[in-house]
Image (cartoon, rainbow, N blue to C red; front, side, top):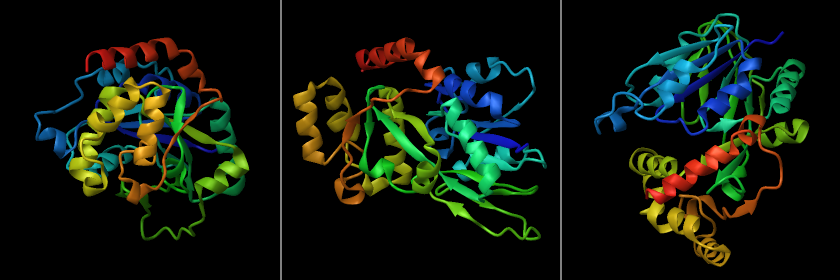
Length: 294
């Protein structure tokens, strides 16, 4: 049986963390979590998550002792990824890179495992259905591009992360690995598997995400004052207001249009993963509270 470790780095990511873990737990040989801030947040006085992230991790049921958690402060996300991979069992076949706002349907995890066992790729990109402003709309265009999200990697004993952006695994020199990549488009066409990415759902989540990316990652590519100029007006607006806002910026992604092309919202008509469906009322309540609190 294929042994899979789900690897996660997280800092103040309690939004759908519990739901994320609920979906993957039955299929995991290991769940490896590195919690804590990178340098940018340390410079702002942060040493660990102050939301419910640690509470969720500490109290998550783990009857089979699958979960390993490390806490720390990291120079950047490369170091944070390698903080957990040190604890990966030597018999793990695949490492599934998992953010705390990425949730999978159980049947899709099963399809993915079947695909890995049959095709034996060394890396797989996964299509992202990135939700925006709630649970009824998702982002098209840029967010659906091929291999925006590299997520599943063949691993051997001694493997480590070379980079987090883009996600890249480095194998020990003595392991002669012949690489075979399956891109996100091919993977989706063959399996129908995609991740349900709740990355632009909660106002506080978006505010912190864009602040960090503007300062340390995407920088000049990001629209200035994105949160107040685009995200909040879209959230508060009626359909007419949203239409004109999206037309002005060729969509609503935080990148400037010249860097990402059109990225409009589209109504979601499918089914959310099981744990999300079961939590929609409380999750929508949280969105409403965060909007009310500014």
